[in-house]
Image (cartoon, rainbow, N blue to C red; front, side, top):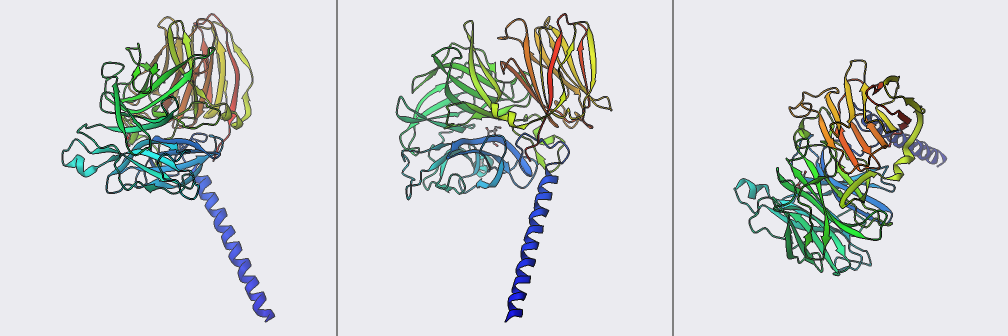
Length: 515
Ligand code: FRU
């Protein structure tokens, strides 16, 4: 008897040890996974395989959800699913199982999610409030057969805060009357009209719809055929109000991604500032304004339901021109850091600012370099290890300066300001691996200084192994770029030779890994 008990005990201990060992092994696998070459350390990237647009950004019951376009079989685009990750602080992420799989209606393209608090959809069960996802179905068959109506809109709901999803039996909820590109629905609750409003894109314009129950949709209006940039198809719209900084007033912002046709080539995100009356969006703006002048911030949209009402944006840090060719092996691409959007009025013009959320500061680590001043007419070469995973803050009224990130192989990434030409630029032509695809390293990328005040500017740069995000004056201007240096940059040259005012590096700090 005793022997039997002792035997059981030994067995139990052995099983527990094995489990522990397995856990440690799994943790080690996870850890080493996130130490692969070029793996971002504080940006979200999928465990493995292909990712593109952020989808279904929603906050619910203490959880920020990040769904995303995902192909679980390969590191190039393929039949789309919605991948899923969750976060409590928008900084640290936990991976979840795939949320939405393709079905008989098609692949699951981009879309959004809402919390249906008042159970307008009738999906509530046992008092559980439904999360409703609204997405595009893309029928491969329809496309192959040369039909034009292969994209329709469908919905699915979850009663366990996003863990499992049920597709609506009467999908699609918005059929297609023959528009080839008809996709990316973004839905929000519009209080003044007491209805859901849906924005989607249809080739060269946006369309608005309204609904009482998320199932039956009525067309409202079109916007944009003759406004903004039309170098390619419109994608991933988002419509929301924003308070004008320093005033009680508010304006509506319509974000539209366009591919190709971005200012520095390929995919980019434009915005319009205007008014929305529950039916139509109107604006005086004729020309495109760009949310980001870098080449790697695309298909970005904002969170629904954020508790303090902040507008938080996440973009896909890549570009359709070369997204499928970037030199990573196990996974492809990452998201931008979450950025808070705000609206500034400069003279009679409105500018949409985007800047990392405050919470990102929880990752700030050790000081790599304390304050230094590079006076006008000089330059300084600083040896800094850890540059590839760092945050650099500087300020200057110098009208002409360059920051050169260099490694032992003389690969160099150059950020510069040139007041004569009235531009900022990022030059990644010699930054490392660039020849994997024509178009990645073929030219300098340029941003105009429009909207920026004269005088001193503040700069913040986030470096994360294969990306660089550059923010000027709290996000009045931003440039997001992928980079693939063969060796980590360990030298920072600050060239202020043509400048007349000092460049002050306030700090260079380590940014800790989230993995
Ligand atoms: C934007 C986009 C969307 C589409 C999705 C497909 O990058 O082309 O318009 O829904 O990607 O993955």
